[in-house]
Structures are given as C-alpha cells and as structure tokens.
Length: 241
Image 1 (cartoon, one colour):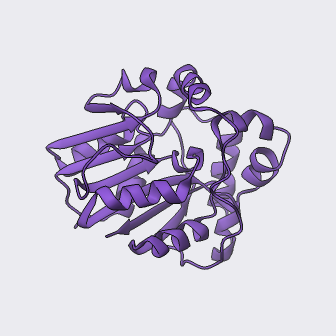
Image 2: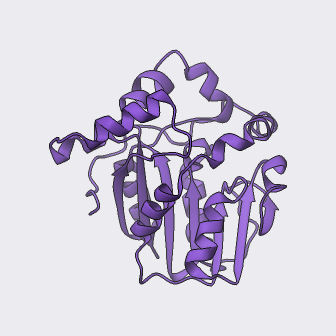
C-alpha cells in the first residue's frame, strides 16, 4: 500500500551546488563498496513495489554505482538492454552491463529510449532535481515506468544529523539534499509523470550496524500508520508516463 501525495514544496531542490563534480567523483570512487549494502530481502521489497505486471526491454539506472540494483532489474525483467549511468569512473568499472559516464541532469540518450528508468539513493545527490526528473521523463517511453529509492527527509536521522546537524558539512561533499517524498510526488506530477506513489520502508542491509539493528526493531513496533514518515528512514517511489 502506497502513501498518498500531499504537501507543497518546502525546500529548494536546485541549490545543491556545494561540491564540484570532480570532488563528487573522488568521493564515490573512495566509498564504492558502501553503496552495495542492501540485503536480498531489501531488493525483494523494492521489486514488489514495481508490480508483477510491469515489463521492460530497455532499462536505464541513473546513479547506478556498481550495478547492484541493475542486476536485480535485469533478472526481474530479463531485459535485453541494461544501461547504467554514473559520475564515478571507479564505480562504473565494476558495472556488469553497459556503463556510461555522465550526469543525470543531461542524459546522453534519444527521447523515449527506455521502458524503465531507476535511481537508487541518487536523486538526493543531484544538483538540480527538477532538471534530472525532466530528463528521465524525456528518455522514458510512453507507457514506461520509473523507480526511485531515497532517504526519507522526515526521518529524525536525516533531520537532526545529516540535513541540520553536526555532519552537514561532511555530507555537503556530495551535494546531499534529502527529499521529502511528498515534494517528489508534486514535482513529478508537475512534469507529467502519472500514478506517482510512495511507500516508507526500513531496509535490513547485509551487514547492519548497531544503529541499523536498532532501527529495524523500532520499525517493527506497533504504531499508528501516520507515524511511518518519522519511523522509516527510506521510501520507494514508483510512477509512469
């Protein structure tokens, strides 16, 4: 069951200019292993949100990293064409499919080239989110689908530690700007995406930290459904064209 869209924009998603592309490339090259941390059950939950009826022959993953999500999408769709785009040459060296060095704000592909476009933990690092969403919409075929997995800006960790806390300076190295899912829905609808819905989630991870294990325990406690926006640190967004 997906959460409903709602609130007006509360943040300027075009501001994230604190880091140069060169610095971001260096950062992602150094932290390559960190971005393949999800467990198999996490990917199963992600694919469940996509839906069984969705089919795709050509897939684009923006901010693909080393291709962990792309591999699952390839298996799920049996796609003939799987393209991964990233700013990090080091991460692309590990990508098992067709790697493309580039930036999501300017996708080097013809319009309506892909049936399915995905981005996992990537959009909050993009300097101009609206421009990137427009580019994804442009390269998506009519009847195609999108999948986004993002940190939840309403979660206390993001509000107190990353976005407004003592680690803000560190996270600015990667132009980190957490996204409120309601804002993402509003932006997508304004561009022309259809059926944009989201689902809050807590991932288990392959090797969870003490904080991660505590988060899993908290997320499993009985609570009002409306508290999900503050309990779960991630959300999964799906939509179409």
